[in-house]
Length: 330
Ligand code: GLU
Image (cartoon, rainbow, N blue to C red; front, top):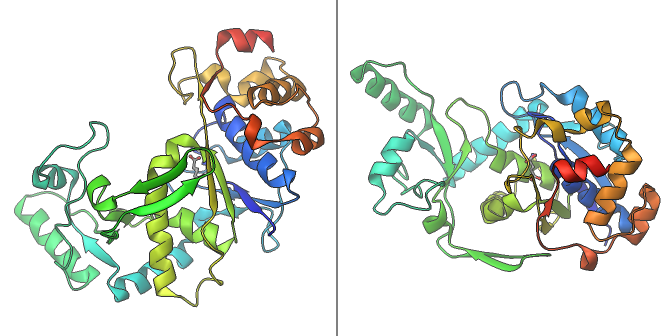
């Protein structure tokens, strides 16, 4: 079977060494087997494309290339709202998705036991079966806002999650099984501001683009079961809006890059942004050689050689560090 992978960066921040390493791995995994790889810009949030030109420049500088999709050089999620909305409308009709007016506070109050500290409580299903239509939920919210003397919020849409565990096998992390009602509850697929949620768009697009392999940072391992629940709902929907089901992708969640503080690289690690390295005179060859070693390969700077030699077995399973020392050595 031919492999179709994807590079799916969010241009909300600049690309850092950690993003670059995950994207390189996605590229290598596809190219190693002669597969296709598409670029999808995940610019769903307002102002989501602030860094798009820099992002494209960084990807190219790094040596990545990608295959057009439907005659376009890359896909932008911000241009695909019509498809997401049409599918949400169908799911709403089918009852797999329902309007929700709960606030985070409502949810925390309704939950019996606090969940993992940083994650918040699982959604207890308060709005399941509560409103017949989106309009009814909106009318409720307007009335509540009037009583509370505040501007009304929008209405979210939530997907009913299965009662039974969602199981999948990750290439690096092995078999996984998540009981979604306990883990997170019904999933927000449309935000209150009317924008489609990442969790939904990512699956619609992976399906529409025929993606068979998802390689990304292991911070997304935890939400993969939610994405599979979206796949399952779309399968039940059997919509004309989507091509035939390409099957669930093979997931590989790769270890992240940590900074000197032991935390994963993020916006605060300004000095480790690709553009910044470039300005400091670091060459793409030197960075690729470091990346190559960090993924268990010989320090080659040649993309073709890296693609040839890439081997999942050689990839270290633990996070790697990239800080001042590594930067100085480049
Ligand atoms: N756009 C997401 C990010 O940059 C990645 C989404 C994905 O690979 O599924 O974190």
